[in-house]
Length: 256
Image (cartoon, rainbow, N blue to C red; front, side, top):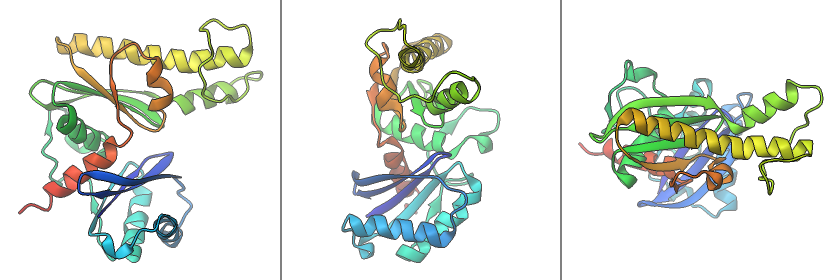
């Protein structure tokens, strides 16, 4: 089995793959105050409650956009499994062709998503990832990573509304029955759900116009399942995209 860790600003997704099949996916809160030992206990506990035999772990790989935690997670994995985790970083083999100004500053999560998206959907392709930020990345018909757009994520938008105003409350992410609503909470939910869906639709349309041709679209990320059903653009939803991408990159770096 392969242990995969996708570390975002808000959540860490811990996955296990047997071959190409995701057999376990658990999401925990990213906490920069936790120590290596605390993360080791957390990983061990996830294995224990899911009846995972640590001896079955053959390797590990990490994607991280939280550099201060990367070393702690890597050391935690080493202490629990005895395996030294591969880290997605400049110099690692990905097979991805980059057509950007400085490939070294592209987030590991964007690279992993692109690798998995191309493998699964081919090219050209637009990849929507809805996490702390909402990103849309473009792969052209020659399978080149072109970059894309970065926008405030759903939870950032909700937090900005409630903390930046005196009368707007925190809300749950639910779609009201109508777009036009007389109640404050329903109006906010409409703006968040339908507004975010419309933003994504609009950006996808403009990106396809930039490319000059139609593309497939794949969506992933913790909040994608709550927003993308209200998008008008046809797209594939895959919440395991990052874990699959990590497996692909891990395999590429085992071949001599």
